[in-house]
Image (cartoon, rainbow, N blue to C red; front, side, top):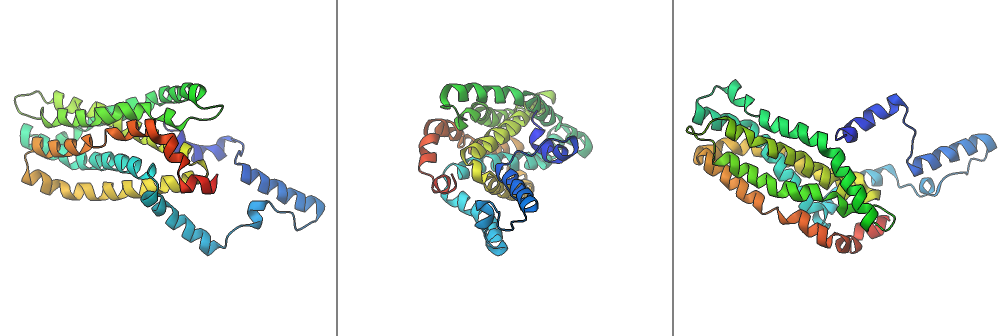
Length: 283
C-alpha cells in the first residue's frame, strides 16, 4: 500500500489504469473534436492561456522556492521530514562508528546493525493502509463532503514523539555492558517514524495544495536532498568530537524541537490554508 505512490507512475501505463486528470481529458476531447470537425480553433481554456515555455520553466523552478519561503505549512513540514531524512543517511555512517567503537564489530557487521531501521521501514509500509483508513474516517467526520487534510496528521503526531525517543534509546544503550540487540532494536521505531512522517506530511501538503502538489513535493524534495547530502559529511567530525551517546543526544534534542509541528497544524492548519496566497491563487 505504501509503495503505490512510487509504483503508480511506473505500473499505471502497463496495467492499463485509465487517465483521470481533468485537464488532460479535456485536452484529448478538444483534439478529437478538431479532428472530427476540422475546426482548428477548438482548444481548452488552459491551452489558450498557456504560458511560453520559458515562463513555464521559470515558474517550475521558482514556485517551490517561493513555497518554502512564504508558505507556513510547507516549510516546517519539509524541514521536519528533511531533518529525519538526513538522520537516516547520517546513521549509515554513525552506526558503523558506534558499534565498531563500543562492540568491536567490523565494518560489515556494524552495518548489519542497520537492520532494525529496515524492519521499521517495512512495518510502516504494511501499516500505511491503516493510516489511510484514519484519514477517510476523519474526512467523513470533519471534511464537509470533501477531504480533510488534517486527517493525514495522526500518524505524524505519533511519529513526532517516537522519533526522538528512539534516538535517545540508541544514544544511551550503545554500551558494552548492554546487549547489542537493545540499541539495534531502537532502529525499529525510528524506521517506522521515517516512513510515517514522509507519508503523512507528503499527503497533507498535497491535499492542502492539490493544484500545485508537484511544486510542494519539489520544495520538500529539495530540502531532503540537501540534508541527505550534508549530514553524512558532518558525521565523522561529530563523532570524533563527541562520544556516540552525546553525539546522538545532540541530534535527538534537536528532533525534540519538531514535536509540535503536526499538533500545531492539526489545530491551525485550516486557518493557515485560508490565509495562503498560493491556495487562493490556484484554487
